[in-house]
Amino acid sequence: WSKLRKKANADKKVCICLFQFPPDKGNVGTAAYLDVFGSIYSVLQKFKAEGYTVGDLPDDIEGLQKSVLEDPEAAFSMADLNVEYRMSVDEYERLCPYAGDLRENWGAPPGELNTDGRDLLVYGKKFGNVFLGIQPTFGYEGDPMRLLFAKSASPHHGFAAFYTYLEYIFKADCMLHFGTHGSLEFMPGKQVGMSGSCYPDRLISVLPNLYYYAANNPSEATIAKRRSYASTISYLTPPAENAGLYKGLQELSELVKSYQQLRENPQRGATIVNSIVATARQCNLDKDIEDLPEEDFDTKELSLEDRDGVVGKIYRRLMEIESRALPMGLHRIGVPPTAEESVATLVNIAQLDRPEMGIKGLPRIIAESVGMSAETIYRNADKGVLEDVTRLQQLTEASRAAVRELVKESTNDEGRVESVNPFMREVFSFFSGGSPWGKALAESGFPNCSEDDLKPLFNYLEGCLGEIVCNNELPGLLKALDGEFIEPGPGGDPIRNPDVLPTGKNMHALDPNSIPTKAAADTAIVVVDRLLERLTKQGEAPESIAFTLWGTDNIKTYGESLAQVLALVGARPVPDALGRVN
View 1 (tube, rainbow, N blue to C red):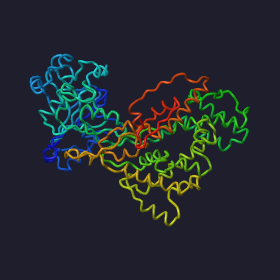
View 2 (view 1 turned 45 degrees about the horizontal axis):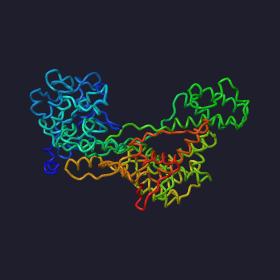
View 3 (view 1 turned 90 degrees about the horizontal axis):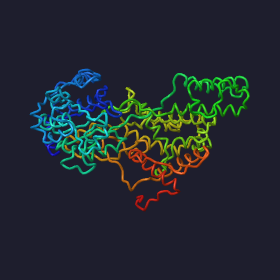
View 4 (view 1 turned 90 degrees about the vertical axis):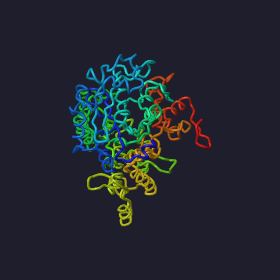
């Protein structure tokens, strides 16, 4: 690390490590939520601008990909990858101090992986002083747990040769593992406090280890920190957007809208309900909806209220499908988010109440403007009450319209948000007597939303937008490569905890004494009540309930699962004066 502080950028040698899992399936250069080759191209261009020796870079991302992968798909065998170095067995055994320890599991080198039968092969491509290296496979793909739990397990000779090449032949000054996640930190050895005989310690040796890691996964990032001495640099995960509807489901949605206009017409209303039921069955929704009438049943025999109940159940299921969250593509490091990506993130952030900050969630503000509570709308919509299912859809669309007005002020000509610009909003508010989002809500059918409630929420969202578009992922990497301090910050869900933003921080998980939080306990009570209500409807209360206390989930939710366990035994966490739960 001290050498990085002193060495000139032009002389620094950096290895960017790509992953491939599962191997030989077209997965070279993949990572969770990340456009790997697009991001690497951005990094290399930044390196060039900062004076690093990067040689002749390809003209575009596709050229970069082809230079590493002789076959762009790399789908058939390791032979499709570019071989940067051939290491003889003699050289390997001379340079790798633990080569003899691998014989018990893998026999004599070169073995069968990352080899042509004579030499050990290091795959990748050099650009000046930057090596794009492809991390070898686990070697235990058929039984990966064996690598973790077998006492005598070890990496294979090809894996050891890769890291031996980096330290002794390429002479790297720093390692950058690119994206979530590789296999170095999962190699055999102790869970924490590595010794000289633990393979993560042997492999990484004295190389400074930087690791681009998805901001929403502090649990596994902690493993990388504990077992491979990584300094993580978090990157933003793509926002979640509604999945939408297609084909038969879209047709079904149109039929429901037609029914809403003609529901009181006894002839046409019933005919449309018959079509809705038939289309729902064609879309297999009868598997999800209890008591759906048969296709040959004529709903003219039902009262208007009963027909509304049938359509409400179907519409609720449709809305569940349409609103399922799907990631919007892949994140590219160094590229600001699009306006639509920013809207999707902020809409999710705006949904949550934050009582500790005196902020009401947008759905609550809108619901109160029509004299209702958000909880009532959610509960009735969940039961399939048509009026409330429709109201929930209107509420969702109004929320999106209001947030879009906030983002629109800061959108550039390319449809991306690079910085936050509140100036035009303040001018608009001065001359029109109201905020742009207040006007958007009025145009969506909710003219009475309280500006006193909207103002703190949208001030908060404006701050969040600034953190979302703050491009700290490349500057964070450059600071690390200069041997400087990387600011620490929490990992987890940026929707629940916007303190995760901006990314580009050295991620940590959480203080165990701080969970479950009050918000987690409040949510847990609602979840437990609904669970017991549903089980009781099925005819019997549960005698026992099993929980999987998954680390990542408890970190993301700040202890909701723990709070659910407490709620089921009739308890809730009470923090002390310092906010610790013990």
